Amino acid sequence: MPAHRPPAGSRRGPRRWIARYGTQYLAISPYYLIFSVFMLFPMLYTVYLAFQKWDGIGEMKFVGLDQFRFLWDDPVFWLSLRNTLVIWVLSTVPMLFMALVMAVLINSTRRLTAFYRVALFIPSITSLVAIAIFFGAIFSNNFGLINAVLKAMHLSAVPWLSNEWTIKLVIATLMTWQWTGYNAIIYLAGLQAIPSELYEAARMDGAGPTRMFFSITIPLLRPIILFTVVISTVTGLQSFTEPQVLFGSDASTNPNSGGPGRAGLTTLLYFYNQAFDYNDFGYAAAIVWAFFLLILLIVVINWRLVQGKERRP
Image (cartoon, rainbow, N blue to C red; front, side):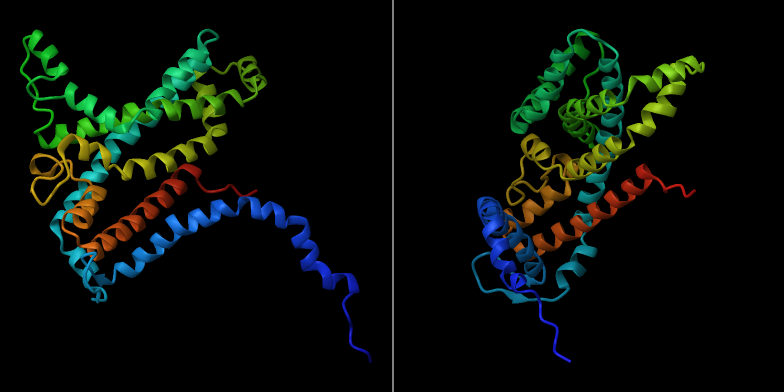
C-alpha cells in the first residue's frame, strides 16, 4: 500500500507563512529584542547570581543555598519585609476604598467631569522624587506645614519622620495620594460601562442606592476591582523611591537606612543596600527572588479572594 503523502502545496507552508506574516513579525521584533536584552536576560541572570557570592568585580564563587539560608536567619530582612507589608496595608486598603467612592461620586455628576478626571490623573504622572521631596517638607519635624498648623492650634507637634509608626504612615500617605486618582479613573470607566437600564429596573423594583451598589455595581465591577487589587498589590509592595528620597539609602554611611530605627526600610530598599552599597550581588539576588515569590503568593491570594469561586449550575 503506497505511503500517504501530504499535498504538494503543504510543503510550501512555512514559506507561505513567512511571506505572509514575516513582515509583521519583523516590525515588532525590536520590542522583543529590547525585552530579551534588558529584562529577560537580567531576570534569568539573577537566578544564577542567587547561588553565587560575587562583589561585581572579582571571581564568582558558587555557594549553593547558603544565600537563602542566611536570608532565612537575617533579622534585617524580616524587618524590611514587615515594614513593607505594614506600609502596603496602610496604603492599599484605604486607597482602593477612596478610589471607588470618588469614582461613584464623579459618575453621579454631569458637570466638570473632564476637570475631575485630569485632576485625579495628575498625581500618577508626577515625578515620584518630586512628590517625596514635597511630602518630606510637609511632614518635616521642625519646619513642616502640618506641624505648623498643629502649633497654630496650640497642639503639640508630631515627630512624623522620627517615630516608627508615623514614618510608615507618611510613606503610606504618599503612596495613597499618588495612586488613588489612577484607580478612581479605572473604576469610573467601569461604572460608565454598566448599562443604566439595570439601575432603572432596580429602582422600579424598589431597590435603594445601597442595595443597587452592592447588588449591581460591585458584581459588575468585579473584574475591574480584581485588576486594581492586583496592580495595587504589586505596586504597593515594591515601594522603594519613597523611603529612599525621604531618608536616604546609603547603608554604608548611614546604618539607619530607611529612617530612625529602620522603620521605613522596605525590602526593595534593603535589596538596593546589599547590591549597591555593600556590593553583595549574590545575596541581593536571593533577596529579590524571595520577595518575588512572596508577591506572587499575595497576588494569587488576592485573586482568589476577589474573584471568588465560580458558581456551578
